[in-house]
Image (cartoon, rainbow, N blue to C red; front, top):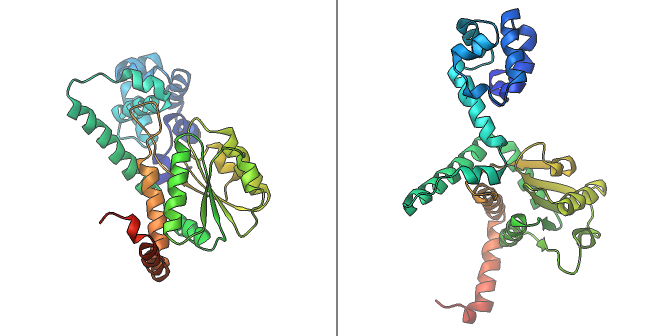
Amino acid sequence: MKGKEGLHKLSLKQRIIDRYPQLSPKEKKIADYILNNHHTVFSQSAVNLAQSAGTSSATLVRFARKLGYSGFYQLRASRINELKEEMIPEERFKLLAHDENKISTVLKIAGQEVENINQTINGIEREKIEVFVDRLRKSRSVSTVGIGVSSILARLAAYLFNQAGLRAYFCGIDEHSFIERLVNLGRRDVVFGLSFPPYSSETIKSMKFCYEREVTCLSITDKLTAPVVNFSHHTLLVHTKNLMFTNSISAVTMIINALATELALLNKKRIVAQNELIYELLKDDYLL
């Protein structure tokens, strides 16, 4: 049985399965009904659901509380949120109503980005960040990989890691595949993969190739069931929910920036000296 914190992260279906052995016969009737009708249960009232399950509203309330909800209405609200998450991005986008007020759209997007960042921060343990920083700092080189919007993030990661004192290289697919670019890596190197829906098979194949060759593989993705997790020694999860049908990148860039900043602070003296040298060499190219 899960603790309160673990239970909070479970879906309605997972909670029912987890608590099923502890339910009374009448509560199991409700559980069975919900499992068989989980796509439509959110539209029913407490009275109608209880009647459909052949039990009472009081039993329904006790059932909801056994699952960790305050009552039926929290259970139903939780299921509604799950349905929204289960919808493919294109379908969520279709449901958005056009608003003539352009500021309203800006506020909606800003609110979603803030939520993504807050949920990401709340879900990441400090120990995981420390492991990422340690592996990156001790590496001989860092190769960043990603396709689509992830390629933009991979390029950003390589740039920021270089600014933080690492030998970091962005792997783009031009003349060569990822694997052709990564074939010479060894145990002292790190591959830093970014993978978000729809997951690129090229990214997964390259991570698998490096993982099997005992190259340290770090990844950032959106959930533990993402394919890249299977071929990563360490993974950071971020929230990428977007009102449009693409992945939001605000939480991802925040994490990449945090990693680079932590690395830069650890390498402060060397970074300052390097930046002063670069400025002296290129000062004629800058407009001040």
